[in-house]
Length: 237
Ligand code: PXP
Image (cartoon, protein in one colour):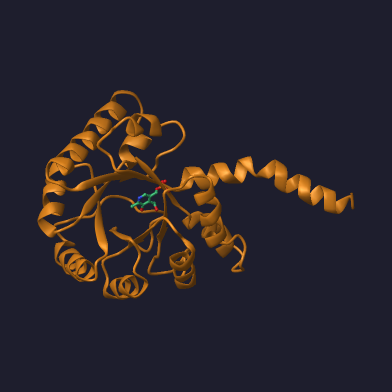
């Protein structure tokens, strides 16, 4: 199983001052040194964190899988074709949301998704659909010509007890369905250092796509070192 690290929230911190630090490209390099098998960024229509320059730099410097998450719009498809990431994951996108709230609605978005998949595939870019843990949605993804699906683990991640067990079963059923249809199955959203183990037990999942918990942990485990470096400067020691 591979681990792909989403560095969007490094850019979220940078955008708090509209400056250059911290740089998500540098963070991606360190993530790769830590063992990341892939780097993910979500280029949003409003560019609230990752921007076009980040994507261009990542394409030049990331030697592992570069996964571009994006909405199935003409603008984003044009950018993907120009940049040529290894993988495009099509996601639903709403301006007001804090993060991607759910899987794609394959019914209403179907026409745009099919068009985007056709164009991306013609250029040789692998395409994944971010879908809810539903076997029907896996079937539709296959029908639309996707190479992979990413099963949304948000409900599993946020639930507890019996409800979490039921959500886990839904995720695993969707994964099995995908594999049986010849689709590669990924999973992601809301996974953290506590809930990832049950998902990581599966031999059928190709990759896990994780962002917020890793960036949050990086802030905390790096705090002591960052303060002590500044303290040395303040004390001129
Ligand atoms: N997969 C997809 C499709 C996402 O949109 C996100 C969030 O950007 C993730 C995975 C990662 O989710 P999290 O930041 O909760 O780990």
